[in-house]
Length: 473
Image 1 (cartoon, rainbow, N blue to C red):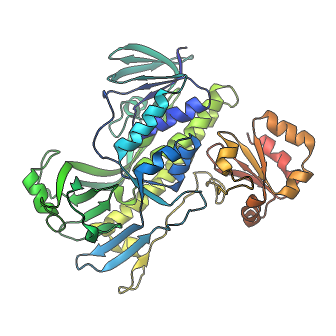
Image 2: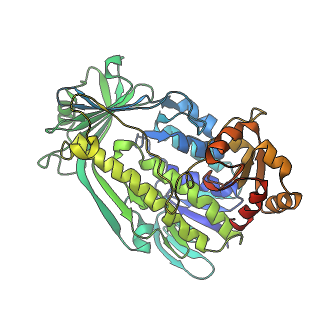
Image 3: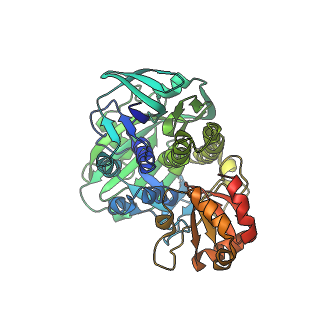
């Protein structure tokens, strides 16, 4: 078989998944219909959990210079009154990174692609459209505009209009948000500090809008489009400037891009059919009000990458792949549902659902959500913290793309040698460090089992209980 995995779609999700699979020793073919990465902005935000995935593939430090720390988001009404405050902490979070980053997608894609091109076992074919797929007991044949390709597995990271999703079938569940918005990216000609660093949601019944501070001199506005406006995907520049006139004019900035998008909320009903799987926008669509669209796709990649590698190597049964949708779909759906509620606040049609019983003269303080994976009850199915260990190394850098058993020093000293050998034979890394003790104490545990995607799988009260981990992976 020429390739272990073929990935259809070379955006950030497809590129990240390719890195994760190559890191696990699989041969990867990446196919994309475009000749090069899209040169204009699209996604503009990712969070600490996503930066941790980038750290895991060795690229966080290369990506960091192209980011801007975001202080968070504010929601204001038509009179400018603060209704909801979602400020983000500026200190490092337990994930080991900052809570919120702004970025310019072409910069991110360049880092991901350049690093991937240098990896052994990775083949990249651009200007290649997949027209059909057929699977058998051994693998998948992909018919493309450049001939046939073969792989054991195929993952569609091919966006909102996914060919792979249509091939798998099942359709999508609509979660109730469907609105046309104008997305405008500008580059400032002169400083405009009055625009601020916070993202601002303007909750106006006549024309809801969003302002986003980007990297460097880049700024973005997202503005609702009325039914009688812009019947296609574009709007005349003069009309764009008219809609921007509350904030900015041609003397302040140049238009980099403007396009009319339909913001939708939906989750695919089927994420897998045999050797075919989907991830990212192919699997779920969200309004942008939480900045979680790309984040959800990167989480998909982190969840799927290690599972696909274990199944391919014969270390786990194919049923492990069924846990991918079972875990990821509810998690993505919860983020989407929150974004839909915020959309109801922004368009002023469902304000009570977002604000709850808050006093009318006091802004609501919003906290970031961190839902567990489907099938888990917190704290399980959530990322474990990433402390700096006694030797100055971050936890993930010590563990790498493997299972880990995290222990107190006392539990490590009492651990049965035979259990240690059996864990090592399974490829698990044992880490005993005082930096782990405060977190383990919150679990009432002396040891914890962590998956390669940094999700907490199990805990044990003492060294003797560590042997039970062997039944879980």
